[in-house]
Image 1 (cartoon, rainbow, N blue to C red):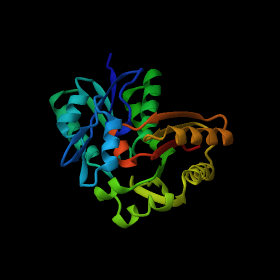
Image 2: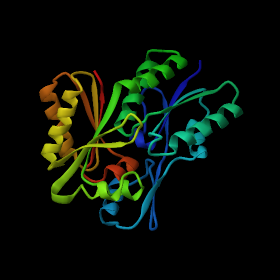
Image 3: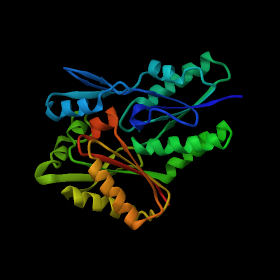
Length: 278
């Protein structure tokens, strides 16, 4: 019987699966002084503390085709989910690895899916794939369903700093200067093109959390799943969870910590909120 393996890059913040085979290809965060590989050995807390005081240039590097091939292993059928192509070359590298893998392993298949997002929205897609695998759905049907599922999910974020986004050319330095000044935080979303789209400038964390809740309400969100990933801010994550459950008691909400790549971009205090659109 052919087994289905789920593979993602480390932006998903997922390292294991209890349902099927799982592997991830690590992203890298690079500075002139240190290189951080976003694998299970990474000291995420230490990395966050390093960037708290580091003022020089830094950049990120996506998995190359060799990294993806190592993650593919020897699986028969693979569902590969990547961070948005709007912010990273991970999707293109995975597609290159797919071509190599299928040409060298006749009959084996790889489905590469561009999430147009990051972090917990990939986590939701992985959970959807696990659910369908557990039901015994056909590989082709699972691939179609996961791709379609991304049309029913979204991502909101709250960021205290945009410095690392600016350092990588993801936002302009002028936009980055907005955050941090007088406690200003940016609330935004992943756009339909998979890019960072600021929506609101909020003074203070409490106002930012209320704004996220308002966006969920305005989108008609009342049931389904929400996955919250935070960078060293469990207090705010739990506060947001309680606010959401106060408005929508039947939601399935889980909180996780960002791993390396998401911690680098979210920075200390940042939060990513993925949700099913209902």
